[in-house]
Image (cartoon, rainbow, N blue to C red; front, side, top):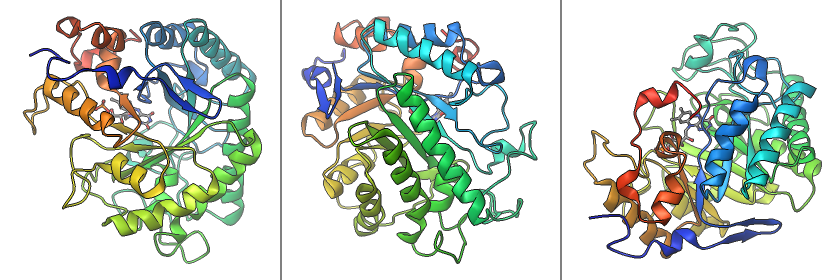
Length: 367
Ligand code: FNR
Protein backbone atom coordinates (compact mmCIF):
# COMPACT_ATOMS: atom_id res chain seq x y z
CA UNK A 1 0.00 0.00 0.00
CA UNK A 2 1.45 3.35 -0.90
CA UNK A 3 1.52 6.36 1.38
CA UNK A 4 -1.68 8.29 1.32
CA UNK A 5 -3.85 5.46 0.00
CA UNK A 6 -5.43 4.95 3.37
CA UNK A 7 -6.09 8.61 3.85
CA UNK A 8 -5.26 11.91 2.27
CA UNK A 9 -1.84 13.32 3.04
CA UNK A 10 -3.28 16.81 2.72
CA UNK A 11 -2.96 17.69 6.44
CA UNK A 12 0.83 17.49 5.99
CA UNK A 13 0.64 20.12 3.26
CA UNK A 14 -1.42 22.75 5.02
CA UNK A 15 0.38 26.03 5.76
CA UNK A 16 1.34 26.93 9.32
CA UNK A 17 1.55 30.46 10.70
CA UNK A 18 2.90 31.79 13.95
CA UNK A 19 3.49 35.52 14.28
CA UNK A 20 5.95 36.40 11.52
CA UNK A 21 6.67 32.79 10.64
CA UNK A 22 4.66 31.30 7.78
CA UNK A 23 5.50 27.81 6.60
CA UNK A 24 4.23 26.32 3.36
CA UNK A 25 3.59 22.95 5.02
CA UNK A 26 3.99 20.93 8.21
CA UNK A 27 7.19 19.10 7.26
CA UNK A 28 10.31 20.06 9.21
CA UNK A 29 13.87 18.87 8.71
CA UNK A 30 15.07 17.70 12.14
CA UNK A 31 18.35 19.16 13.43
CA UNK A 32 21.20 16.79 12.57
CA UNK A 33 24.85 17.29 13.40
CA UNK A 34 27.05 16.52 10.42
CA UNK A 35 30.49 17.66 11.71
CA UNK A 36 31.42 18.95 8.29
CA UNK A 37 32.21 22.59 9.07
CA UNK A 38 36.01 22.72 9.52
CA UNK A 39 37.04 25.24 12.19
CA UNK A 40 33.35 25.80 12.88
CA UNK A 41 32.73 27.47 9.51
CA UNK A 42 29.86 26.14 7.37
CA UNK A 43 30.98 26.17 3.74
CA UNK A 44 29.32 26.15 0.34
CA UNK A 45 28.71 22.39 0.64
CA UNK A 46 26.67 22.94 3.81
CA UNK A 47 24.64 25.67 2.07
CA UNK A 48 23.98 23.40 -0.92
CA UNK A 49 22.94 20.54 1.40
CA UNK A 50 20.28 22.66 3.11
CA UNK A 51 19.22 24.31 -0.14
CA UNK A 52 18.51 20.88 -1.69
CA UNK A 53 15.96 20.19 1.07
CA UNK A 54 14.38 23.65 0.65
CA UNK A 55 14.11 23.20 -3.13
CA UNK A 56 12.29 19.96 -2.51
CA UNK A 57 9.53 21.56 -0.50
CA UNK A 58 10.47 21.18 3.19
CA UNK A 59 8.34 23.62 5.21
CA UNK A 60 11.03 24.41 7.78
CA UNK A 61 14.69 23.50 8.11
CA UNK A 62 16.16 23.25 11.59
CA UNK A 63 19.93 23.39 11.25
CA UNK A 64 22.31 21.04 12.96
CA UNK A 65 23.31 22.24 16.42
CA UNK A 66 25.46 25.39 16.11
CA UNK A 67 27.84 26.18 18.93
CA UNK A 68 27.40 29.27 21.06
CA UNK A 69 30.42 31.42 21.93
CA UNK A 70 31.68 29.61 24.99
CA UNK A 71 35.01 27.74 25.21
CA UNK A 72 33.41 24.57 26.57
CA UNK A 73 30.48 24.40 24.15
CA UNK A 74 31.96 21.51 22.13
CA UNK A 75 35.14 19.54 21.71
CA UNK A 76 34.54 18.82 18.01
CA UNK A 77 36.31 21.28 15.68
CA UNK A 78 34.00 20.40 12.77
CA UNK A 79 30.77 21.48 14.42
CA UNK A 80 29.60 24.86 13.11
CA UNK A 81 29.70 27.98 15.28
CA UNK A 82 27.03 30.67 15.68
CA UNK A 83 29.69 33.27 16.40
CA UNK A 84 32.78 34.75 14.76
CA UNK A 85 32.81 36.57 11.45
CA UNK A 86 33.78 33.65 9.21
CA UNK A 87 31.19 31.28 10.64
CA UNK A 88 28.47 33.94 10.52
CA UNK A 89 29.33 34.72 6.89
CA UNK A 90 29.06 31.00 6.18
CA UNK A 91 25.65 30.82 7.84
CA UNK A 92 24.47 34.00 6.08
CA UNK A 93 25.19 32.21 2.80
CA UNK A 94 23.24 29.14 3.98
CA UNK A 95 20.26 31.35 4.86
CA UNK A 96 20.45 33.15 1.51
CA UNK A 97 20.45 29.88 -0.41
CA UNK A 98 17.52 28.43 1.55
CA UNK A 99 15.49 31.63 1.16
CA UNK A 100 16.30 31.78 -2.56
CA UNK A 101 14.78 28.30 -2.86
CA UNK A 102 11.64 29.47 -1.05
CA UNK A 103 12.46 27.77 2.24
CA UNK A 104 12.51 28.81 5.90
CA UNK A 105 15.38 28.04 8.24
CA UNK A 106 16.02 28.35 11.95
CA UNK A 107 19.29 27.90 13.79
CA UNK A 108 19.66 25.36 16.59
CA UNK A 109 21.86 26.78 19.36
CA UNK A 110 23.88 24.21 21.26
CA UNK A 111 26.16 23.74 24.24
CA UNK A 112 26.98 20.12 24.98
CA UNK A 113 28.01 20.44 28.64
CA UNK A 114 29.65 17.19 29.70
CA UNK A 115 28.61 14.04 27.86
CA UNK A 116 30.16 10.73 27.06
CA UNK A 117 30.51 12.09 23.57
CA UNK A 118 32.47 15.13 24.73
CA UNK A 119 34.71 12.98 26.87
CA UNK A 120 35.83 11.02 23.83
CA UNK A 121 36.44 14.16 21.81
CA UNK A 122 39.89 15.64 21.34
CA UNK A 123 39.32 18.87 23.24
CA UNK A 124 38.30 17.17 26.47
CA UNK A 125 39.68 19.70 28.88
CA UNK A 126 37.75 22.59 27.41
CA UNK A 127 34.55 20.62 27.10
CA UNK A 128 33.82 19.71 30.67
CA UNK A 129 31.34 22.03 32.31
CA UNK A 130 28.12 20.76 33.82
CA UNK A 131 25.64 21.66 36.58
CA UNK A 132 27.10 19.38 39.24
CA UNK A 133 30.32 17.91 37.84
CA UNK A 134 28.47 14.65 37.14
CA UNK A 135 28.28 13.15 33.65
CA UNK A 136 25.36 11.30 32.08
CA UNK A 137 26.62 7.99 33.40
CA UNK A 138 26.51 9.40 36.92
CA UNK A 139 30.31 9.59 37.13
CA UNK A 140 32.23 12.49 38.62
CA UNK A 141 33.55 14.65 35.77
CA UNK A 142 34.93 18.09 36.58
CA UNK A 143 33.58 20.71 38.94
CA UNK A 144 30.04 22.12 39.24
CA UNK A 145 29.55 25.32 37.25
CA UNK A 146 29.94 28.50 39.26
CA UNK A 147 27.29 31.23 39.09
CA UNK A 148 29.59 33.35 36.98
CA UNK A 149 30.11 30.46 34.52
CA UNK A 150 26.33 30.09 34.37
CA UNK A 151 25.97 33.81 33.62
CA UNK A 152 28.60 33.54 30.85
CA UNK A 153 26.75 30.68 29.18
CA UNK A 154 23.41 32.49 29.38
CA UNK A 155 24.99 35.52 27.74
CA UNK A 156 26.54 33.33 25.04
CA UNK A 157 23.09 31.93 24.20
CA UNK A 158 21.64 35.45 23.95
CA UNK A 159 24.54 36.55 21.71
CA UNK A 160 24.03 33.47 19.53
CA UNK A 161 20.32 34.29 19.22
CA UNK A 162 21.10 37.91 18.28
CA UNK A 163 23.65 36.72 15.68
CA UNK A 164 21.14 34.31 14.17
CA UNK A 165 18.53 37.04 13.87
CA UNK A 166 20.99 39.55 12.44
CA UNK A 167 22.11 37.26 9.62
CA UNK A 168 18.57 36.48 8.54
CA UNK A 169 17.49 33.22 10.20
CA UNK A 170 13.72 32.85 10.61
CA UNK A 171 13.98 31.83 14.26
CA UNK A 172 16.09 29.91 16.73
CA UNK A 173 15.80 26.60 18.49
CA UNK A 174 17.42 26.04 21.88
CA UNK A 175 18.62 22.44 22.27
CA UNK A 176 17.17 21.50 25.63
CA UNK A 177 17.08 17.74 25.06
CA UNK A 178 19.08 14.53 24.80
CA UNK A 179 21.21 15.11 27.89
CA UNK A 180 23.17 18.15 26.69
CA UNK A 181 23.86 21.16 28.91
CA UNK A 182 20.35 22.61 29.30
CA UNK A 183 18.96 19.11 29.81
CA UNK A 184 21.71 18.38 32.37
CA UNK A 185 20.11 21.14 34.44
CA UNK A 186 16.63 19.62 33.92
CA UNK A 187 17.64 16.09 34.94
CA UNK A 188 17.86 15.13 38.60
CA UNK A 189 20.70 12.69 37.95
CA UNK A 190 23.01 15.42 36.58
CA UNK A 191 21.69 18.40 38.55
CA UNK A 192 22.27 17.97 42.25
CA UNK A 193 22.77 21.65 42.97
CA UNK A 194 21.43 23.14 46.15
CA UNK A 195 21.45 26.76 44.92
CA UNK A 196 18.68 28.44 42.90
CA UNK A 197 19.57 26.39 39.79
CA UNK A 198 18.81 23.09 41.52
CA UNK A 199 16.05 21.47 43.55
CA UNK A 200 12.74 20.04 42.35
CA UNK A 201 11.76 19.70 38.70
CA UNK A 202 10.38 23.24 38.53
CA UNK A 203 13.51 24.70 40.11
CA UNK A 204 15.69 22.76 37.69
CA UNK A 205 14.08 24.72 34.82
CA UNK A 206 15.64 27.95 36.08
CA UNK A 207 18.76 27.80 33.90
CA UNK A 208 16.61 27.28 30.78
CA UNK A 209 14.20 30.00 31.88
CA UNK A 210 17.05 32.51 32.20
CA UNK A 211 18.40 31.49 28.78
CA UNK A 212 14.97 31.87 27.15
CA UNK A 213 14.44 35.26 28.81
CA UNK A 214 17.89 36.47 27.72
CA UNK A 215 17.30 35.26 24.15
CA UNK A 216 13.87 36.91 24.11
CA UNK A 217 15.43 40.16 25.22
CA UNK A 218 18.03 39.82 22.46
CA UNK A 219 15.62 39.05 19.59
CA UNK A 220 12.47 40.97 20.54
CA UNK A 221 8.87 39.82 20.96
CA UNK A 222 8.07 38.41 17.49
CA UNK A 223 11.14 36.36 16.58
CA UNK A 224 10.29 32.66 17.01
CA UNK A 225 11.98 30.80 19.86
CA UNK A 226 11.59 27.03 19.76
CA UNK A 227 12.70 24.85 22.65
CA UNK A 228 13.64 21.22 22.04
CA UNK A 229 12.92 18.96 25.00
CA UNK A 230 13.19 15.22 25.45
CA UNK A 231 12.59 12.71 28.17
CA UNK A 232 15.33 10.39 26.87
CA UNK A 233 19.04 11.08 27.31
CA UNK A 234 22.03 9.75 25.41
CA UNK A 235 22.80 6.39 26.98
CA UNK A 236 19.57 6.47 29.07
CA UNK A 237 16.72 5.98 26.67
CA UNK A 238 14.28 5.15 29.47
CA UNK A 239 14.95 8.38 31.43
CA UNK A 240 11.87 10.41 32.38
CA UNK A 241 12.01 14.02 33.51
CA UNK A 242 8.25 14.03 34.00
CA UNK A 243 6.68 10.81 35.19
CA UNK A 244 3.06 11.93 34.77
CA UNK A 245 1.04 14.58 32.90
CA UNK A 246 0.89 16.56 36.16
CA UNK A 247 4.68 16.66 36.40
CA UNK A 248 4.95 17.55 32.73
CA UNK A 249 2.56 20.46 33.27
CA UNK A 250 4.68 21.71 36.20
CA UNK A 251 7.85 21.42 34.12
CA UNK A 252 6.44 23.24 31.09
CA UNK A 253 4.71 26.15 32.86
CA UNK A 254 7.85 28.21 33.64
CA UNK A 255 9.22 27.59 30.14
CA UNK A 256 6.01 28.91 28.56
CA UNK A 257 6.06 31.87 30.92
CA UNK A 258 9.66 32.62 29.89
CA UNK A 259 8.63 32.98 26.26
CA UNK A 260 8.84 29.71 24.29
CA UNK A 261 6.75 29.93 21.10
CA UNK A 262 6.93 26.32 19.94
CA UNK A 263 8.00 23.14 21.73
CA UNK A 264 9.96 20.60 19.69
CA UNK A 265 9.23 17.37 21.55
CA UNK A 266 11.90 14.84 20.77
CA UNK A 267 10.89 11.22 21.03
CA UNK A 268 12.44 8.19 19.37
CA UNK A 269 9.13 6.82 18.00
CA UNK A 270 6.36 9.34 17.44
CA UNK A 271 3.63 6.72 17.80
CA UNK A 272 4.58 5.72 21.35
CA UNK A 273 2.20 6.96 24.07
CA UNK A 274 4.01 9.17 26.58
CA UNK A 275 1.96 8.14 29.62
CA UNK A 276 -0.36 5.17 30.25
CA UNK A 277 -4.06 5.67 29.59
CA UNK A 278 -3.80 7.88 26.49
CA UNK A 279 -2.42 7.60 22.95
CA UNK A 280 -0.93 11.09 23.11
CA UNK A 281 2.81 11.31 22.51
CA UNK A 282 5.12 13.88 24.13
CA UNK A 283 4.22 16.53 21.53
CA UNK A 284 0.54 15.74 22.04
CA UNK A 285 0.71 16.11 25.80
CA UNK A 286 2.84 19.25 25.56
CA UNK A 287 0.34 20.91 23.22
CA UNK A 288 -2.60 19.84 25.38
CA UNK A 289 -0.99 21.13 28.57
CA UNK A 290 0.43 24.42 27.27
CA UNK A 291 -1.78 25.39 24.33
CA UNK A 292 1.46 26.08 22.43
CA UNK A 293 2.18 24.64 18.96
CA UNK A 294 4.35 21.52 19.03
CA UNK A 295 6.63 19.56 16.72
CA UNK A 296 6.76 15.78 16.87
CA UNK A 297 9.69 13.64 15.70
CA UNK A 298 10.85 10.06 15.85
CA UNK A 299 11.38 7.43 13.15
CA UNK A 300 9.02 8.92 10.58
CA UNK A 301 9.51 7.16 7.26
CA UNK A 302 12.24 4.81 8.40
CA UNK A 303 12.14 1.50 6.64
CA UNK A 304 13.21 -0.91 9.32
CA UNK A 305 13.30 -0.43 13.03
CA UNK A 306 14.24 -3.77 14.53
CA UNK A 307 12.21 -3.26 17.71
CA UNK A 308 9.00 -2.38 15.90
CA UNK A 309 7.83 -3.89 12.69
CA UNK A 310 5.60 -0.98 11.70
CA UNK A 311 5.55 -0.56 7.95
CA UNK A 312 6.74 2.91 6.92
CA UNK A 313 3.58 3.54 4.92
CA UNK A 314 1.31 2.78 7.89
CA UNK A 315 3.58 4.97 9.95
CA UNK A 316 3.08 7.99 7.72
CA UNK A 317 -0.67 7.40 7.58
CA UNK A 318 -0.68 7.36 11.39
CA UNK A 319 1.38 10.57 11.49
CA UNK A 320 -1.08 12.30 9.18
CA UNK A 321 -4.07 11.09 11.21
CA UNK A 322 -2.54 12.46 14.40
CA UNK A 323 -1.71 15.75 12.69
CA UNK A 324 -5.26 15.95 11.37
CA UNK A 325 -6.57 15.44 14.91
CA UNK A 326 -4.36 18.41 15.88
CA UNK A 327 -2.43 16.33 18.41
CA UNK A 328 0.62 18.36 17.24
CA UNK A 329 1.26 20.98 14.54
CA UNK A 330 4.46 20.01 12.75
CA UNK A 331 6.39 16.81 12.07
CA UNK A 332 10.18 16.72 11.98
CA UNK A 333 11.90 14.16 9.79
CA UNK A 334 15.48 13.23 10.61
CA UNK A 335 17.25 10.27 9.04
CA UNK A 336 14.71 9.78 6.24
CA UNK A 337 15.36 13.33 5.05
CA UNK A 338 19.10 13.01 5.55
CA UNK A 339 18.96 10.02 3.20
CA UNK A 340 16.67 11.62 0.65
CA UNK A 341 16.78 15.39 0.04
CA UNK A 342 13.59 15.06 -2.00
CA UNK A 343 11.63 13.32 0.79
CA UNK A 344 8.95 16.02 1.06
CA UNK A 345 8.46 16.34 -2.70
CA UNK A 346 8.22 12.57 -3.18
CA UNK A 347 5.64 12.25 -0.42
CA UNK A 348 3.61 15.14 -1.83
CA UNK A 349 3.64 13.67 -5.31
CA UNK A 350 2.93 10.08 -4.23
CA UNK A 351 6.36 8.95 -5.45
CA UNK A 352 7.13 7.10 -2.25
CA UNK A 353 8.34 4.06 -4.21
CA UNK A 354 11.27 6.30 -5.26
CA UNK A 355 12.36 7.22 -1.71
CA UNK A 356 16.04 6.58 -0.96
CA UNK A 357 16.16 4.56 2.28
CA UNK A 358 18.36 5.66 5.18
CA UNK A 359 21.54 3.68 5.68
CA UNK A 360 24.53 4.69 7.79
CA UNK A 361 26.69 5.29 4.70
CA UNK A 362 24.49 8.33 3.91
CA UNK A 363 26.35 10.03 6.79
CA UNK A 364 29.64 10.05 4.89
CA UNK A 365 28.84 13.02 2.64
CA UNK A 366 26.59 16.06 2.59
CA UNK A 367 24.21 14.73 -0.04
C1 FNR B 1 20.59 13.83 15.32
N1 FNR B 1 19.74 14.45 16.24
C2 FNR B 1 20.04 15.71 16.70
N2 FNR B 1 19.18 16.37 17.49
C3 FNR B 1 19.40 17.66 17.86
O1 FNR B 1 18.56 18.24 18.56
N3 FNR B 1 20.54 18.30 17.49
C4 FNR B 1 21.49 17.70 16.73
O2 FNR B 1 22.50 18.34 16.38
C5 FNR B 1 21.26 16.34 16.35
N4 FNR B 1 22.18 15.65 15.61
C6 FNR B 1 21.83 14.44 15.02
C7 FNR B 1 22.69 13.86 14.07
C8 FNR B 1 22.31 12.70 13.42
C9 FNR B 1 23.23 12.11 12.39
C10 FNR B 1 21.07 12.09 13.72
C11 FNR B 1 20.62 10.83 13.00
C12 FNR B 1 20.25 12.64 14.67
C13 FNR B 1 18.41 13.86 16.51
C14 FNR B 1 17.43 14.19 15.38
O3 FNR B 1 17.12 15.58 15.36
C15 FNR B 1 16.10 13.43 15.54
O4 FNR B 1 15.46 13.85 16.72
C16 FNR B 1 16.30 11.93 15.58
O5 FNR B 1 17.17 11.50 14.54
C17 FNR B 1 14.98 11.19 15.44
O6 FNR B 1 14.38 11.48 14.20
P1 FNR B 1 14.42 10.37 13.00
O7 FNR B 1 15.83 10.30 12.51
O8 FNR B 1 13.99 9.10 13.64
O9 FNR B 1 13.45 10.92 12.00
